[in-house]
Length: 305
Ligand code: NCD
View: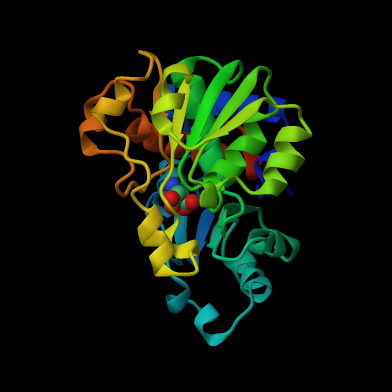
């Protein structure tokens, strides 16, 4: 049985197949409308979510399956002190596959060790968010036509942003990838990723503070929100939260084909005036997230259409 805990759980070839499947789902949704009839997806969300929970649910419903679950720790037995290990044993009796988001790093890994159904990590603390990465890869491949030979700017909260951590892990496996890490000093990419992932794989990268300087040379800009919930004090968050604001004036420094991605939710880091810029791809990204999660559910359940 397979789980998705880290983006590296799939080889590059397996990822290619998954993205191809997502592409076929986009072109022929009717072919897949009953593929999961009789199957149930459980969504176990111990942390707030809009897109990730609802896109997993929409994906299962689009496949003709059903969904059950909870959307906050308070409304589950976690509030009574039940462990993740015990909860997943129960859920294995109720559903065929589950997606889990938890504030603790490693929670999904613990879950999969006690589960008899496939577990999808829908975000574990500041660690990883592999289904967002699948979404990002499908978006980039669909809109850019490739996943290699690109200069990618990652901007914002690179310290706590799990979407960035997962995306870096996935992208270093493609040739010709370079990163520009754009963050305030206090929100730099953790050294375990800089050293163990970037340096180990000989990936060229530079760290800069000013977004304007980086923009002209980027093929892609991945903006992120400052992760309020992971700060130890409100004061630091308030000081950092508006450090970057991408607006039309800054977009004028970027090339005509530079895509802007954002996992969402956006707070202030992209001004709404950028939404109408043809290079803004963050709402398209949301739609790709449904196709790729449909492909993921089919793959983990080993259902062939
Ligand atoms: C991201 C997350 O939860 O890490 N959101 C999402 O799933 N699309 C990004 C964020 O919350 O900033």
